[in-house]
Length: 516
Ligand code: ATP
Image (cartoon, rainbow, N blue to C red; front, side, top):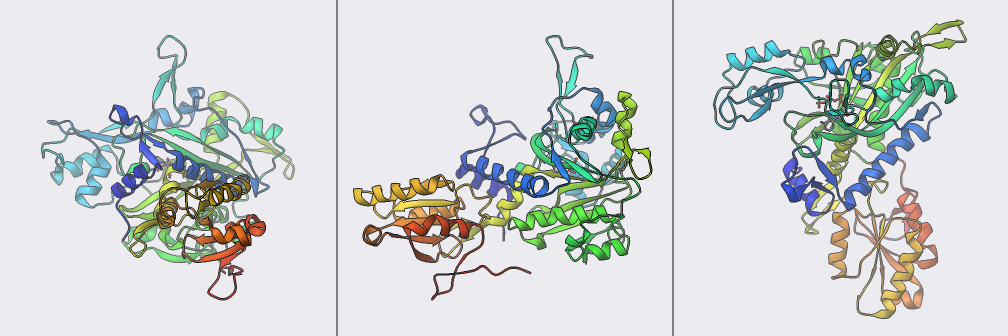
């Protein structure tokens, strides 16, 4: 049984992972600060994403755009007119609700894609009332979620600007500059990570729905006629995912496990490129230790899909509060580039060498991942309340762990042990994020490291002084090995890279088995 989201929030607060923002003033709903450990985990997560989707590839380049861009951006993108959620409030106590979420919670009904009038009808027909005081609810109204601000000293309509509600638009604004300077050729992607802001009506579920959050997004551009010519398809053909197509949802059936090849052959996913990016999104989570079986891809049903999207799928994760969206991935075609061409008057087409014609590339997939939701997934995946040990063990993948190694002197009051331990600590610190801890019993120190996910602990004892070796203890198995100090750095490097593993009794280490 995994812990509830409130228990996760209090664990994170206790351990310095995530705190409510501005807590000394009573906090601010929907805003969170990452503490000393959380900021390390989050940075590790973002770096791992950037490595996987930008550095390890030849076809994706990165940008770092502004949070505030020309206000016309958001007119062109449709956010000014349409970036709405459904708002209602109690006529008596003024408790505020996001109407679609309230109906889902109270009536256990899937209302994805329903409009204002339909939601109002459901509330009336089913007598949905305020959950706090049971009074009537006001008419549901659309509410634009963009945060506004003013540029310059005089607030006015002309000076109104928006904090970006998604990072994606920067990729379209910079498209011309990137293609002119970036030496990119179709197919290619532009990636960005950064803050996004949404004035959510009712933030809830801790980091899952905040008003300030981060996104990691890619706009992947292809030749409009080549949506099925994905040169990387072999990487994912046999990749299996739980697939919840619009049709299965319509017939109220369960999601089915399928390979990406099956999804393409049966035209469940409309293009090979889209199938490829969905599988890559899943593979990234699994590469960092997430349980593959807790994910599914769910297709947007007809009413739910944005008007410009040809096909949209969400990567979902099974949280304790249900299957929820982790990542949205729409096939946006040439909608955005065309909109920006129309509103800016600039030509954003590319010259196609093959056809000797100008073309407007299509965004075949827009993998749009929330950093904070990914962070929650990895925490849930790692969190284990180990009854035998009597403490929580955070089994984070070494890449994500805030500290990779901890070094302890066996006893804190023996100078020869502490100075040797400091020596070992100093030699490791430049290679890995390393923590030095001399307080409390060694058992207590192991427990503290388990709780913050440190994969390996190194203990310096009296034998270390004579034999120049130390004990290395593995977080997940609690097994221990003696390692010569002059081999310690390389051994830890190999353990952290997954090249070595703690063995069964007998041989000191054995190579880790490759998972097929
Ligand atoms: P939801 O339906 O849950 O509100 P959405 O469909 O509006 O999400 P997108 O616009 O597709 O979300 O945004 C892409 C991703 O950004 C989401 O999949 C999620 O990971 C992240 N995200 C969106 N809104 C929030 C939020 N309020 N707090 C944290 N992450 C968010």
